[in-house]
Image 1: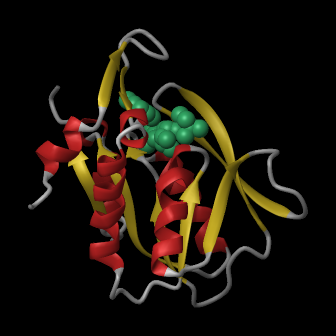
Image 2: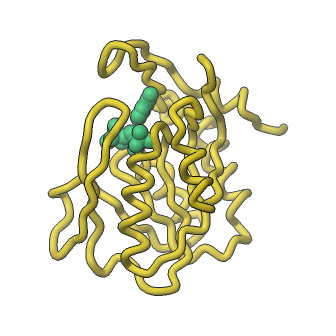
Length: 180
Ligand SMILES: O=P(O)(O)OC[C@H]1O[C@H](OP(=O)(O)OP(=O)(O)O)[C@H](O)[C@@H]1O
Ligand SMILES: Nc1ncnc2[nH]cnc12
């Protein structure tokens, strides 16, 4: 059986006006209560990246961790944690950014990556792209090349995936919510 945008969207729950009025929150929680759905999501990425030359998977706090850690295990790649400020011990580098509903700061440990690393950057959702662009800046500061950005959900109306593609980074999302 082929799994497509329609199937993956069926795994997402939309909560209107959360966390603020006017936001349609795309909730990925149902993926994790549905073992088949979880497997199909992970397998879609395994299928895409099994033969790729990525050396690392980087993932973003917190929802990005959930699938990326399973994917790193399946692909036998090291996992780099991009965390919200103040969570990582030792020396870190940080980058502030704006969100659809606020602002925040991301950090990675100073020795997380090295020159020549070929990174797949994973997050659950692309909205304005502010989070991913901040994470990309941290990875690049350590000499890494971002091979691709992967997400479960793209919200093209918010412009993030277009912004990332304009930076010549390919974007792969399992489904998109557009004009809805
Ligand atoms: O494209 P953007 O406009 O930057 O928005 C996307 C980001 O917003 C959400 O994270 P959030 O900061 O809400 O954190 P969480 O994963 O800890 O819930 C989501 O998980 C993405 O990381
Ligand atoms: N609309 C949305 N739903 C879920 N997570 C988000 N992160 C930013 N915008 C979001």
